Image (tube, rainbow, N blue to C red):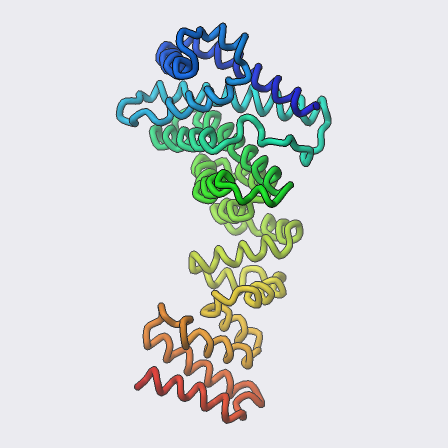
Length: 362
């Protein structure tokens, strides 16, 4: 198939670039020799490439793990920079640009959802962990104003995002695949790091690149995080554009972010045109009852506010609240019930709130 031909081309191209790179780095050539010796004794690189090219992905992964797992104190900055250059040369330039982009999509015109029976050869836990570690190791080894830093970090982030998108496409094609430990490990790796990738771009003043990448791959959490680094006057129109484009999924991500960082003014007042989404969000998110009641009062929905305030003040919902907070919430629940015509006239409802208040105060 075309995908099988593509894979063979990418492996060959990556291997050729890798071989050329080793000729200029004695240190990495030595590490590769040790990696190679673990496969077959006395096998030269040239012989390996001619007779065992199908084994290159496995050994290349071992090599990446070896060069990224070396003790940080023993790695020079030049060595780290060379590993970054090698990763960009082999995985970004030779594989993503010349293989995936040029051959798969431009020449073969394959549908992005047309997938192989296995994950792409460059997508596995060890390779993506190595590139992720390389990214952070190099980023924290240099100052943010060093010349050309963006040219080194941006391709690594693009490779990581593309690879994890392939993960999502492949595992979603047949959901039963997700029971594998591989999926859990890949998902954890992504969840733990994707926000830091976009934040790194923002630190380099590459918000535009971060927005393009996170929008393209629909990483809405990182997209919101990027927009939040911009001035409100700059980001406001972008927010409205993405509310229109992504709908409730984007809105709920924005609202959850504002709650987590305690930006309640923005939550309630920054996007008045998204009021319906905000109401929907609170209806779908019982865990945010400690905030939802404010919106309900702003909407003059005192009956719902009273019920929310009452529910967050009793049982398991109040384990993290002080007695003063519970007393305040129950008092507000009582006042809200009184303000809502009819609700405050129901003795059983008011008696229950009063009983909860007496318990807290007593």
